[in-house]
Length: 210
Image 1 (cartoon, rainbow, N blue to C red):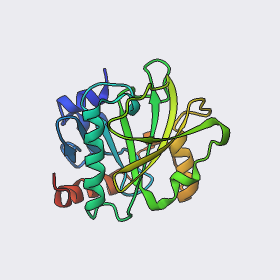
Image 2 (cartoon, helix red, strand yellow; image 1 turned 60 degrees about the vertical axis):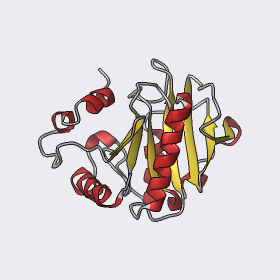
Image 3 (tube, helix red, strand yellow; image 1 turned 30 degrees about the vertical axis):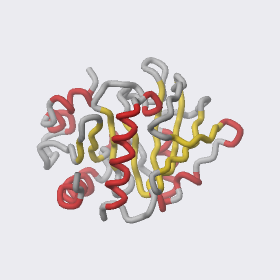
Image 4 (cartoon, helix red, strand yellow; image 1 turned 180 degrees about the horizontal axis):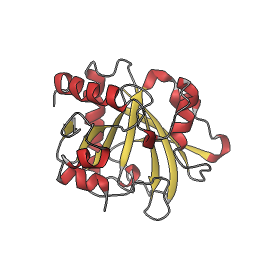
């Protein structure tokens, strides 16, 4: 069973999955016909959002034109709100196909954090990376196994892709822990859940207009 598909169909299931202490009935903070957004579990930074497709596909590069348009619109909504304070977003994904990709959950979900943390520039795979500009209109052949980090600013997305990743398990969280000087990186430990997830849900309900 895909946990994200289950949550899309039945938002209240999050209470069962994450425990009775979870203070909100569900965590969906944004939705349109193609995507929805939820607070990331075990956040190392604030705000920390996951944006996923409603359709079960393995990765962002394989999203349709309409799905990518929804993503870009959502990024614009975030930047126009006061939920995120910088003028850019940093986006990252453990991508790829089922039974071979980099993510433990093979349902397209991308991580969104503040751009001014400097995380996009911090990640440098040197000769193992390819730089591309991503637009909703372009079609990409998604590699079977890849890491992607991107910067979104003024309607444009610039990305770096590593198609020969090493040390894949929670790779970006391990790197992010170095930037924010946080020893904990494993989302399963539940770091900052009771503080930041309810705060983000409440803030998005008040500030996100869509």
